[in-house]
Length: 108
Length: 113
Image: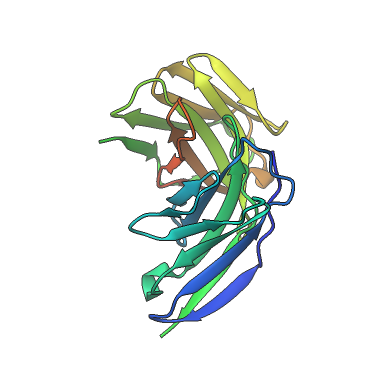
């Protein structure tokens, strides 16, 4: 399973876009890229996933580099409710391995 | 719609006591099931996963075990708890076909005293 690396923490001002980076330089051709977020004392929540093409949903956008060695989760307008730990995972098969994620602070 | 139930929400157990945490999924069949543990301030550690009844894959050797007696039931057990077993235990499910994402329960906070 490919290892992912993310910054430990990031800050954003409320109502501004947030770009959360993830490196997965050893990703294989069949590994999907998933993003989850976790609020304190709650289970992680699915955000988005993709393979090669950029993906959009109601929560966020996922931009995947052409070589697939990195990706960026984009929150278009950060709100205070977006403050959480964001995990990037590369997945193939049945195993999902989480790293330590990026703790996002949203400043009012 | 699919739902996942996990209980209890909190648990305080003495060292050496047994443990049983239960997780059930509704609204789907033949899900992949997972147990994760999260120590305070840390990431999630995959403990066990199951792709079918009676099929358990263990990721980390320890004094915990898992069982899947029914298609949508996943149980985490221990015969004798250690202090190091304290943590936030999360059950999750994913669909059995394709790149299905994980869906987590609300977790059980276990404190071993």
